[in-house]
Length: 198
Image (cartoon, rainbow, N blue to C red):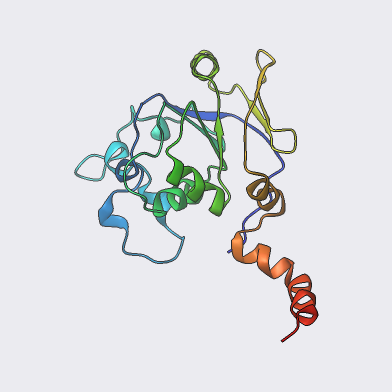
């Protein structure tokens, strides 16, 4: 399933300064029945966003109208726990295109890259600077430059580089998942097959 191309993203962000956010909190197991990547955003952080009577918890950042944007800034060890890919689906379906943290669980990180969400790992010091800037001004913007692999806090100009697998980077730039990538090089594959002796 193709997704929007990712090049440079400059937007405000939602702060979630909680460490060890696991995939069961990102999308609780009771919402994993669907097989399509649609509708999961409604239940992103369901048990943190809503009370038992389904009324929103207004002190939770995603329910706070002063925050907005396409970036989620999370605490260290984001996406730990089970390997459910639905967690990445929920993040994308809510409207986030990037998650910034000082450390990601590997499986969650790869699941994000497969669906068009860019996980950006920064130093713990820079992460705290980002949180502080958002709290000082909820409209402060963060610029994520995938071609140059940098993330910049626009209010201060402070910037850090981040790592990404080159194959995943190219897919993100083109809006490809693994199937799209293979479809894109279908001609090359066919030519290769023709050149092989049988």
